[in-house]
Amino acid sequence: MDIILVPGFWLDASAWDAVTPPLVAAGHTVHPLTLPGMESVDADRSGITLADHVDAVLAAIDALPDDAEVVLVGHSAGGPLVYAASDARPGRVRRVVYVDSGPLADGQALNADLPADVVDHHLPPWEELDEASLTGLTDELRAEFRARAIPQPGGTVRAPHRLSDDESRLDVPTTVIASEMSAEVLRDLMTQGHPYVAELARHRDYEIVDLPTGHWPMFTRPVDLAEVIAAAVER
Image (tube, rainbow, N blue to C red; front, top):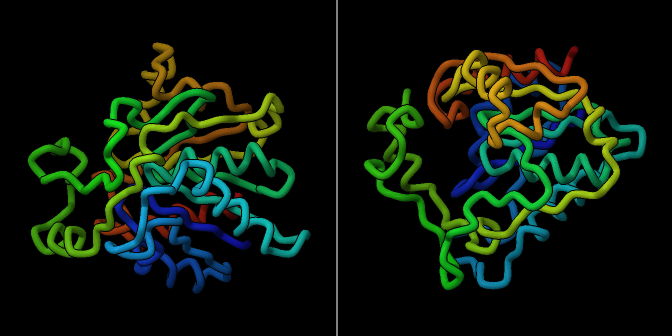
């Protein structure tokens, strides 16, 4: 399989460094992405749009041979990106894997309230984040994360995601790796019709797999994360 790995906010391709070797050892070809504006702390993010990030995922798909079996993996904010890519290329994507993430519906934004003048959206202080999201992040891992963090382009945070009217994307096999919230909690939210999981509930072929830890399993449980991804890919 060709596995395209898309990081979430504040991260570049190196976020997957500890996940990649086990996937390669399992026989897969891995393509970790650094999205536009995330090349360095000093990169110009003023003109980067959400469409630029979706286009980067599409470019990675299109660069592969037509007969390649493509799996898209998106962590956190990378989840809606791979979903949008599966919407644009449903026939090219064998499976979508969401790492503590999920699909957003058309018109949904990650943070529509982010002020329009914010160009660089920085990783917040730890005390401003939900404590559950930090589970497993030791002081050493927090220091490493903080040192490698890159500001997120503000335009990618507040813009609404846009999807086509073609619902073929709902037929793409889907795996959600539940880390911060358990599979049981997510299923309960789906039963309640919660907007956080409403788009996932529309899918016709999905599974939710538990990997208990915080929001960044590529740091806290990288080998286990690779094993869960590999197991999903092989279904």
